Image (cartoon, rainbow, N blue to C red; front, side, top):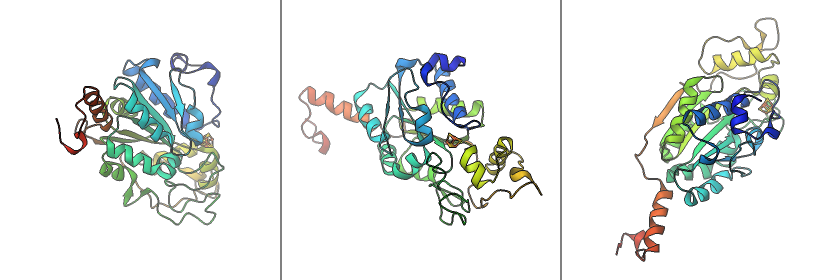
Length: 300
Ligand code: SF4
């Protein structure tokens, strides 16, 4: 158990059950470094988790208050908590790509529309990996998976002309960033900025799933080569996935997906009100007998 784990996590949950070489631990570490860097303790933050590999690895690990919401519903629970808790109490959610951009997308967009003061960390393994490796909303086009044996032929949210972060920006999010789990201090700074933003924030981490995405879509079991593919595919130096010429079948993934820059994608703190603060304001006014007609502008 390392220093950060001892400080913030429950001993009985360490080590986690992620496959050896999985990038999830790196994402988790970036979050803990950001929390520590902001000088926050276990009582300053409530941690919620979703379903799948990302939710399973962070479920109930946080020493402070935490909760789980299955299958895209963690945002609805977090919205209620946000209305109930004081602003000083931060709420961080760790969810997967299916949870965020698939089954939970409607809830996620509504949190962005309301600019609710939540920090959503999406740990994206490019498919439904915890159930054996089926394609999901961010699986690269052309990828061979268990549910696309001839290569994925539908557009995803990481297409060359379609980026889920653009949709979230249009929906009203006030802080958005994207990183690979392999990114260093820059990704920690993004998480810190997300936690500090008084509105809806999301940091999209893409990380290597060595067990399914690596073994099936990249036809590669060497973890170093899987990591090299991620660096190359997402714009950070040369990689040689698939073993190079003569050493294996090579990646079974198309090239028509988004090459994106990494770092802060959108930052507009304070540009929109946080709906939960409005609700608290109305509640205070109603408690003072000033509530009638507030929603229609008929202030007493
Ligand atoms: S299945 Fe993939 S994403 Fe899930 S824990 Fe294993 S390596 Fe990580």
